[in-house]
Image 1 (cartoon, each protein chain N blue to C red):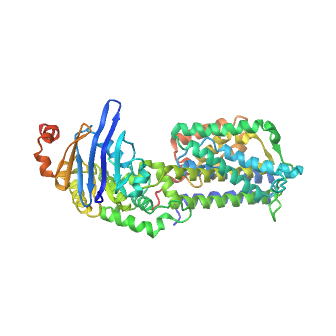
Image 2 (image 1 turned 90 degrees about the vertical axis):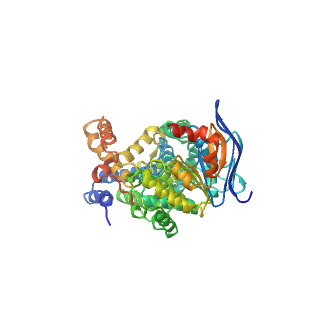
Length: 328
Length: 251
């Protein structure tokens, strides 16, 4: 049975496909790029939403994973384009311009970072958790600024977009297709996760920690696992985002980026599966439409965010379809 | 010793100058309901938390099923078979009644790290969950949101979730609180039969329920157990009357 929310979800994900296809037939590559950007940022939000929406972990440090994904792409591709070996032992490795390998490295390293950051920060909760995740994010940000081997403050430019077997990634619509398919896969994964035994226990730990402990489950390990999955997905988004721009810089690691990813989630609706899709799409539209009117378009974004937080706690999706039904 | 399901040995716990537990020694045997009573501030909650593993005693031991668990946390004790209900309902309020029961069954089965199967379609979890709801009389409310339940129904759900764990013993902190006469009587009847499945350490203010149910009663006053015995022995105990029951009569 289709609920109103799932109808809206289908409508959104279909629109995200139709708009760039229409732009492609009208030869409007810029619109395709905007849609690609929305899909990638939505993916970053899907990652954060697993920690924030499902697990109740208010991480203000997800830029760390987004940036690690970005630098995974930047470093591998920079070595490949300069024919400089990344390491020579135990085998010669000259970086890579192959997206699948880059994604793998991005996912593994952002998951590892999430594991370390999670182990240290999940011992706290509430405002302390927010502050510690923020601190870790900023640590990586300043590290990247001082890491002159990889561009320091200026970041790294990659001349040619990385390759995907069988596709021409320089063609905007083909690169969009990659981002879109990955987003859809992540949404399917997140949906199944939310309904799985793990999801049930994780969301229960958000609602009542005592209850979860009393049935013999450990909230810490549930949260840590979710945090690692969350970081890995956001890291994958970071690799794609860097490839979209063919550029990575410390900005991707800054707390401003963490805030933006959180804004996508809140705009769309915290804990709503498609919340990040709605949020990221709205954000990109506002940036595009209002950005043309005024450089200070984020004032309007702030106003909108204020209205949503005050009057529509379920975000955009909540405002359109009402309170989430507990599914039996 | 082997027939003791739970034993506390000289538990001591102080908060600053306040001695909340003072050489508390009590035990729970198979097939019995052991009630713990005492006036407000006697240290019942502190004792419950030491038994469940939320706080560590300053000295003394807690033994569960013959094993020293003093150093174990709440999760480990729950896994060993301690089924707990809380004084203030601790449930996942956004979930349906059935989801809360399934959560219990999941905890009882173990292995929550499964990421793909739909948990609400797992017969291995649904069966014990529905069974437990049936037993406490919540079968018809399975698909309601827990937040929409009445206070009394939440108490019933607490018991149902504890049941899904198939515990070796129950630790119930004021399950009758706020139930009203009819609900309290119903639950009394239910607990009466439950003791055959697993013994119950029952903290309760409802004296009718306590005297109707308990095989043994322990009286806690100022952190000390001043008497343990059958209902008749406790009624007849002069010290208890002075310290506790008399207070109620006077009130």
